[in-house]
Amino acid sequence: MSLFGLINRGLGPMGSFPFGLVAAAIGAPWTVAICGLITVGLIAYLAFSRSDLRTAKPIGEV
Amino acid sequence: MLLRNTFRAFRHRDYSIFWCGLFLGHTEGLCLGLPRVIFSPLGGAIVDRADRKILFVVTQTAFLLMALSLGVMDYLGTIRVWHVLAISALTGFFVSFEQPVRQSILHQLVPRPELPNAVTLYQMVFNGSMLFGPSIGGLLIAFIDTKGCFFVATIGNSIVLLTIFMIHIAAAPRPTNKTTVSQDMAEGLALAWNTPIFLSLFTVLGIVTFCTKPYTQFMPVFARDILQVGAPGLGLLLMAPGAGAILGGLTLASIRRFPKPHSLLFFLAAGFGSSIYPLRRFASFFAFTLFSIFRRRFSDHFPFLRCDLAANPKR
Image (cartoon, rainbow over all chains, first blue to last red; front, side, top):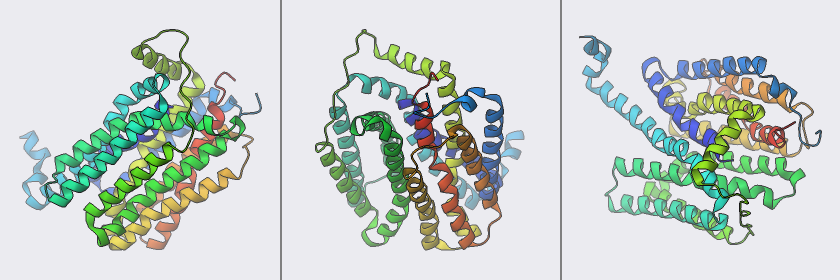
């Protein structure tokens, strides 16, 4: 739970620092677009590379 | 010569002030986030050992005192930027303990089959208040000033403190083997690293949180420079994801379970990322606001799915 909290609440503000610096250089609209592209790219990579998530089953089916 | 060329824009006074303001704004985020990252593993280990109710009371009292001290300093006119940064860092520190307490008592409050629903509703009110909070605060500033907002926050924390005494929080079971806090922290990190399902879920969460949460920081820029809607428009822009959070939460709360939560997790994570991409082109305030509601519905499905998938890591 603490690791969940660490990632869920800690990484957001941590991300605002580097992306804030990027925004100062190239502007907020393109920074937001880059954030979106990085997310999609990394999630697509993870979806194809991690088989354990694809085979996981929900509560009640175990 | 190289340095002078790299930082040449700083020769312009107005740009230097603008950049420093932006840097300071994001430093506040860093002050808040860094202690959370550092102390969260410690918080989890402490929560497993300490009396959860006492820990909950201590952390809520700390929040109350911090809000009150900001209000008093603001009222006296002695508040400085470093005060806000220091309070942010302290908030991050106490949240590292308060959040594991809150989440660890959820399963004591409802039966296990109702846990995903409880997590969804918990996340809904949490995300909703996080997103509605700034906009309501922005509106309140016009009437009661910033000091008034700090005092309202103090009252809010007092109410939370009272509710802690109204619910039964069982003490954590005593560990059978005697391990130190550092051993417990290392064990928790090793469990997350070595259990594939945990590692994958945390990675998905980490990517989405790190890359997409900061978009809210850019809303003032969108409101002022791109959409040109001013402070009222900014308030609506910040409220729109809150509405999405509540709609998404209500949708999830009504669903008992998803047949393929892993597919949905990937779809929503990618959906959240791809939904913020088009924001760079929107010049219509209406379209931007509608899209903000839609975007937030993606992100609010995560806690439910994480809870659903992570409940039995060995499967």
